[in-house]
Image 1 (tube, rainbow, N blue to C red):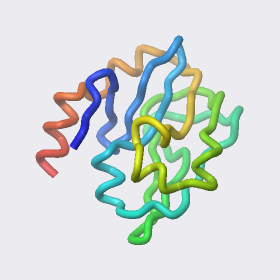
Image 2 (cartoon, rainbow, N blue to C red):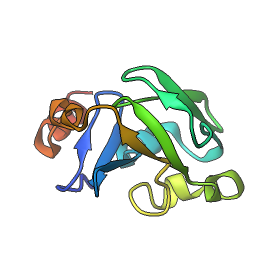
Image 3 (cartoon, one colour):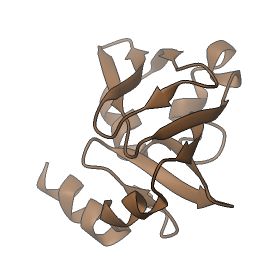
Length: 127
Protein backbone atom coordinates (compact mmCIF):
# COMPACT_ATOMS: atom_id res chain seq x y z
CA UNK A 1 0.00 0.00 0.00
CA UNK A 2 1.44 3.39 -0.89
CA UNK A 3 2.04 6.12 1.68
CA UNK A 4 3.62 9.08 -0.13
CA UNK A 5 6.41 10.56 1.96
CA UNK A 6 5.66 14.22 1.10
CA UNK A 7 2.18 14.11 2.67
CA UNK A 8 0.81 14.31 6.21
CA UNK A 9 -2.07 12.14 7.42
CA UNK A 10 -5.02 12.24 9.81
CA UNK A 11 -6.15 9.38 12.03
CA UNK A 12 -9.40 9.43 10.00
CA UNK A 13 -7.39 8.51 6.86
CA UNK A 14 -7.28 11.86 5.05
CA UNK A 15 -4.05 13.09 3.51
CA UNK A 16 -2.84 16.68 3.18
CA UNK A 17 -0.31 18.26 0.87
CA UNK A 18 0.94 21.81 1.43
CA UNK A 19 1.17 23.81 -1.82
CA UNK A 20 2.04 27.53 -1.79
CA UNK A 21 0.47 28.12 1.63
CA UNK A 22 -2.69 26.20 0.76
CA UNK A 23 -3.54 22.62 1.63
CA UNK A 24 -4.83 19.95 -0.79
CA UNK A 25 -6.87 17.20 0.91
CA UNK A 26 -7.98 13.70 -0.12
CA UNK A 27 -8.44 10.23 1.34
CA UNK A 28 -5.69 7.66 1.56
CA UNK A 29 -5.14 4.49 -0.43
CA UNK A 30 -5.90 2.53 2.75
CA UNK A 31 -9.25 4.34 3.21
CA UNK A 32 -10.43 3.75 -0.36
CA UNK A 33 -9.40 0.09 -0.20
CA UNK A 34 -11.40 -0.40 3.01
CA UNK A 35 -14.46 1.31 1.51
CA UNK A 36 -14.53 -0.64 -1.74
CA UNK A 37 -15.86 0.73 -5.03
CA UNK A 38 -16.71 4.43 -4.62
CA UNK A 39 -19.97 5.38 -6.36
CA UNK A 40 -20.58 8.95 -5.10
CA UNK A 41 -18.58 11.79 -3.53
CA UNK A 42 -20.20 14.74 -1.73
CA UNK A 43 -17.96 17.76 -1.21
CA UNK A 44 -18.40 21.28 0.19
CA UNK A 45 -18.73 24.42 -1.95
CA UNK A 46 -15.95 26.93 -2.66
CA UNK A 47 -16.16 29.52 0.11
CA UNK A 48 -17.32 27.08 2.81
CA UNK A 49 -15.42 27.02 6.09
CA UNK A 50 -14.28 23.66 7.44
CA UNK A 51 -13.25 22.89 11.02
CA UNK A 52 -10.64 20.41 12.22
CA UNK A 53 -12.16 16.99 13.01
CA UNK A 54 -15.60 18.05 11.74
CA UNK A 55 -17.26 16.42 8.69
CA UNK A 56 -16.81 18.31 5.40
CA UNK A 57 -18.32 15.78 3.00
CA UNK A 58 -18.84 12.09 2.41
CA UNK A 59 -17.97 9.22 0.12
CA UNK A 60 -20.45 6.50 -0.75
CA UNK A 61 -19.30 3.06 -1.76
CA UNK A 62 -21.23 -0.06 -2.67
CA UNK A 63 -20.73 -1.11 0.97
CA UNK A 64 -21.32 2.05 3.03
CA UNK A 65 -21.37 5.84 3.34
CA UNK A 66 -18.40 7.33 5.16
CA UNK A 67 -17.96 10.90 6.37
CA UNK A 68 -14.86 12.89 5.45
CA UNK A 69 -13.30 14.68 8.41
CA UNK A 70 -11.33 17.90 8.05
CA UNK A 71 -7.68 17.40 9.01
CA UNK A 72 -7.28 21.18 9.39
CA UNK A 73 -9.50 24.28 9.63
CA UNK A 74 -9.84 26.80 6.83
CA UNK A 75 -11.76 28.12 3.85
CA UNK A 76 -12.42 25.94 0.80
CA UNK A 77 -10.87 27.64 -2.25
CA UNK A 78 -11.10 24.79 -4.76
CA UNK A 79 -13.20 21.64 -5.16
CA UNK A 80 -12.42 18.69 -7.43
CA UNK A 81 -15.60 18.79 -9.54
CA UNK A 82 -14.36 15.82 -11.64
CA UNK A 83 -15.25 13.52 -8.75
CA UNK A 84 -18.94 14.28 -9.28
CA UNK A 85 -18.88 12.53 -12.66
CA UNK A 86 -15.96 10.18 -11.95
CA UNK A 87 -16.09 9.01 -8.31
CA UNK A 88 -14.07 5.94 -9.35
CA UNK A 89 -10.98 8.21 -9.40
CA UNK A 90 -10.93 7.76 -5.60
CA UNK A 91 -10.23 4.05 -6.10
CA UNK A 92 -7.98 4.45 -9.13
CA UNK A 93 -5.83 7.40 -8.06
CA UNK A 94 -6.38 8.53 -4.44
CA UNK A 95 -3.29 10.78 -4.36
CA UNK A 96 -3.35 12.31 -7.84
CA UNK A 97 -6.71 12.50 -9.65
CA UNK A 98 -8.89 12.10 -6.57
CA UNK A 99 -7.80 15.04 -4.42
CA UNK A 100 -11.02 16.44 -2.96
CA UNK A 101 -10.59 20.04 -1.85
CA UNK A 102 -7.99 22.79 -1.52
CA UNK A 103 -8.18 24.84 1.66
CA UNK A 104 -6.72 28.19 2.68
CA UNK A 105 -5.79 27.18 6.23
CA UNK A 106 -6.73 29.23 9.27
CA UNK A 107 -3.39 28.18 10.79
CA UNK A 108 -0.85 26.40 8.55
CA UNK A 109 0.92 25.12 11.70
CA UNK A 110 -1.98 22.66 12.14
CA UNK A 111 -0.33 20.55 9.43
CA UNK A 112 2.55 19.83 11.82
CA UNK A 113 0.12 18.17 14.27
CA UNK A 114 -0.84 15.55 11.67
CA UNK A 115 0.78 12.14 11.38
CA UNK A 116 4.03 11.67 9.49
CA UNK A 117 4.04 8.92 6.82
CA UNK A 118 5.82 6.60 9.27
CA UNK A 119 3.26 7.28 12.03
CA UNK A 120 0.41 6.72 9.57
CA UNK A 121 1.89 3.40 8.44
CA UNK A 122 2.05 2.30 12.10
CA UNK A 123 -1.62 3.31 12.52
CA UNK A 124 -2.87 1.28 9.55
CA UNK A 125 -0.72 -1.72 10.50
CA UNK A 126 -2.47 -1.74 13.88
CA UNK A 127 -5.96 -1.75 12.30
